[in-house]
Each structure stands twice: as C-alpha cells, then as structure tokens.
Length: 325
Image (cartoon, rainbow, N blue to C red; front, side, top):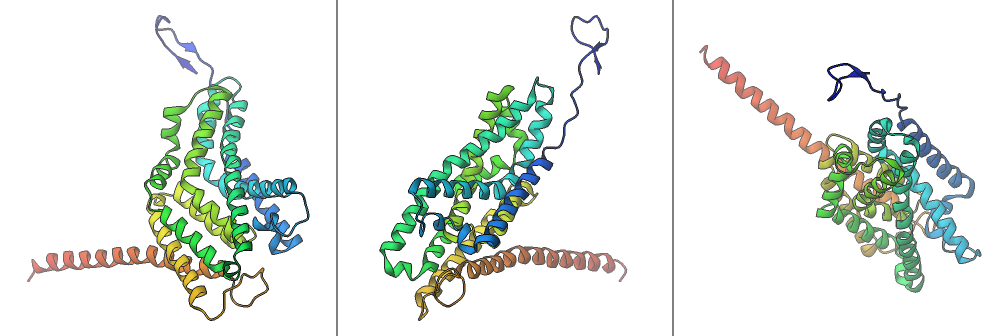
C-alpha cells in the first residue's frame, strides 16, 4: 500500500497492508452449535430433568460444591448457546479494527474472555436465585403444588423489565458495536478484555431477566431456549429489533398473568411435565400464549400499514381521475 505523508517530500512511502481477516462468525456459530448439541444430547441421554437448573441443586446426593459446579457448567453451556450469536457483530468489527495491531490474536481472545467472564459472574446470581427458589418451594407446600404461579411471576417480571430505561439503554449499546468500538477500542489484550467486560455488562443489563427465566422454566426446555435466543438475536441484530422490546414485554406479561390465573382459579393445580400431576406443562402453555400475543402485535401494525397504503392509493386515484370528469 502506497501513501504520502509529512516529511516524505511527496514521495510515496510503502505502508504495511492489513493482513486478511478470517470471519470470526464461523467459529462463534460453530461454538454455539456445539453448545446446542450438548444440551440436546444431555436431554436425550438423561431426560427432561437433566437440563433443569433446579434439578442440579435438588434430588442429588452429590456434595453441594459438585452440585454448584454442575449448575455452573450447565449455565455456561446455555450462555454459549443463547448469547454467542448475539455478540457476532461486535466480534466481527473488532477483528477488522484490530487487524493492523501487532499480534491481534490475544486481544481477540481477551475480548471473548471478558464477555464470558461477565456471564460467569452472573451465574452466582442465578445460583442464589435457583437455590432460594428451590428452598421456598420446598418449604411452602401451597407453592410447591402450583409451579405455574412461580413461572407466571417470573414471566411478569421479565415482561415488565422490557419497558425499563435500563433495558432500552443497554439494548441501544448492544445494537451499536461500531459506536462502542469508536469510543472504547484500545490495542492489546488489556484493551480487548476491558471492551469485552464493557460489552458483557451491556448485554447483561439487556438480557438478565430473560436469562433468569431459564432458572424457572428450566434449561431442559429447548423450546424456551430457542424462543428466547430468537428474541435476543432479533432485538440486538435486526433492523427493527429496537421496536421489538415492548411487544415482547406485553407478550410475556400476558402469558404470565394467564398462566398464574389459570393455576389459581382452576380446581386442580397445573403441574409441570416433569412432575407427577396431570395437566399441561405450564412452560409450554406460557410459550404458546406469549407467541400468540407477540404474533398478534407484529401482524396488526403490518395489516394497518397495508390498509393505510390502500386508502392512500385509492385517494390518489380518485384525485387523478377527477381531473377527467
């Protein structure tokens, strides 16, 4: 690459060109796919209870430290499956920007290490939540007989958070990787680590409530994992993702209220599929209700825009034809 600069007397000076950059998205999607495969394999091998976070804390004769380790391992696999696809845009841009820096490999690895460190630390919060929830349900027989109430409350909490200013601020940061790099990029592994930590905190602030749903719904539910992953990827990477947060919030709140009300009003409690009672799995019911509400919210505005477009077209046609009358 040839350029001229001050002190060169107008003579072209050769500057080193950036080496070709491999697309890191391939590796990230491959890692996410391996995490999905590991989750599905675990469920097929050991049944539905194997992937449930509470299941790693209850009903086991292992020491508590081993149970906590199993919880952490399951949490990291879930984070890899659900969150790695959302970080692809930032990692792609970072790979391009860092290509001219000497030895960019450690900086790129540090970026991912910082991002995963945030979610690993949050695993402690999830562990406390799962332990507290298991203790509460075990000590309160009324609540133990009504698991749908617990899931309904978690859905309402996650839905309400979708309307918060923290959600909107963190979602904006997650959707603007170029701006984040422009403001905070520094060369070297330390710079990559700081940037990964910063982006991880933004991502955590955006998605913590949705991820904690998995503590209640259970990581065994592949349907929930797929649905929440689709929501988070769409929010962060698609053109209309910023407008998706509120419809998702409404869908989660409606699903939570419906699920809890059905369990409270019904003559018999709604049991989970993993339990010994009868009735529909509350997680499946909530997912169906949330999907229906979200679909209705997304379809209605599109239909309204089409109607307005037809009305505008009809008005334009009448005005143009009135000149010939």
